Amino acid sequence: MKKELLIWKILGAGYLTAAVIALAGGLGLLPAGVILASIAGLFLCGVFFGYVVRRHLKKLKSISLSLSSQALIIPADFRGTLLEEITFSIRDFLSRSQDQLARVQEENQGLSLQLQLLRRRKSNVEEIINSIYDAVVVTDERERIILANEATEQLFGFMFENDKPKIITEVIQERGLIDLMTKTRQSKTAHVRHELTFQRQGQPVSFDTVLSCVEDDAGNVIQVVAVLHDITREKEIAQMKNDFVSHVSHELKTPLASINAYAEMLVDGEAQDTETIQQFCGIIQGQAQRLGRLIEDILNISRIESGLIKVKKETHSLALVIRDAVEMIKSYAQEKNIQIESPASILYDQVYVDRDMISQVVINLLSNAVKYMPAGGRIKVSSELDEVEGQVKITITDTGVGIPPEDVEHVFDKFYRVQANNQYAKGTGLGLNLVKQIVETVHEGNVFVTSTVGKGSTFGFVLPLAAERIAQSV
Image 1 (cartoon, rainbow, N blue to C red):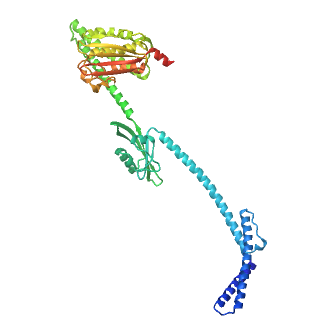
Image 2 (cartoon, one colour; image 1 turned 90 degrees about the vertical axis):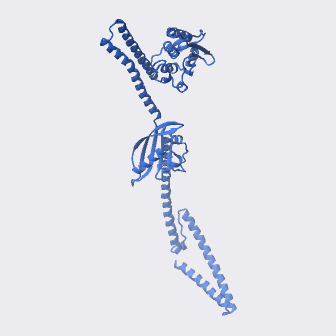
Image 3 (cartoon, rainbow, N blue to C red; image 1 turned 60 degrees about the vertical axis):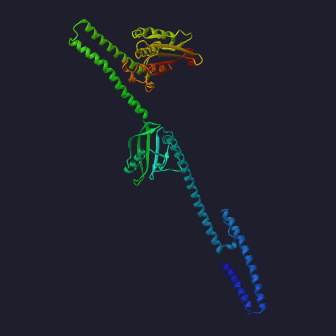
């Protein structure tokens, strides 16, 4: 190391001396020979300096190659010099750098695996949330929507973009939901439940809405989650059950009241003669039969809807079923001077049905036509065979009072009665619903109705032919 410092000192002194002589020559202080000699000496020093540098560069190159191969080789004349110290320092630095780089690479690999796992979990969570039938919406502390599933998009009519979160008021116009989410955030309520009703296509839609807060470690609300479960159908069913109970109670109460009243009069001895007693007993019997029919209709409808009714299907001629039903209702029609035109027999009108049920359908439709028709009217029963479609259509047309347009679509509903026609006849409102259940639920057919007030109505049903039904089953 001392030798190397001496060489660099000599070279430095030589360059400095040559520079001074050149400067003095330039000022005219030294003769030209001295100046030329100094220039020559400067040139020689430069050559020697270049040789030394080149020699050292070659050795440095060999050292750098040995460093890269992790097999350090120090030339003999470099040992104990400054270059040796620098070389060892570089080697130590490179060794530490490689260790750090290995640790960083290992940490990066771990972070990469964790990132992939988080991405997979995020994707799974999004798929799960999108598969939920209920609408799910999540907002952050700035009331931006950071998560919304497909049900939410369909409900509120917007497209959720994960990379472009929007303020909830920009995409959802339902103030009820927005106010609830704001109150939940302010109150820091962990779990709250509300019922919300929105208007969709002019119809009210009800939702059982559950709201929850998500807090950080400091207790600050960072997210609000709202889950909206559509309970519209459930409310309709509940209302239908309430209406059903109410109607049944009312319909049962009427005949029971009559039975009770006339029975009390008999007990109290208000009927003294045989004729009055028979009259009271006849009323009691009629109301009891009405009560029995009502209960039987309710039970039949309930059995059909629950699938518990016993059905005995066989191949029958529909024309013969209609003929027998017309014969049963003729005496009732003759009391009001009403004519019934029945169809001629049709060949190959075989249907695969429960004869008693289909007979009840025809009788119910014929009796309704007679009930709501003034004396002297006419009923026409017709049958139409469609071999292409594999079905037969029965229509019963009357010249009665007709049904108002607003009531036509409801006549097959349970307990529905046309208020405008109450003066003509009384009923339970179950007969036509039973017709619908028998034809559509039990026999996979269709019922229909058309009507004009003051001119009459046409009720009918369509059933598949037996051949078509058998072909489908095969």
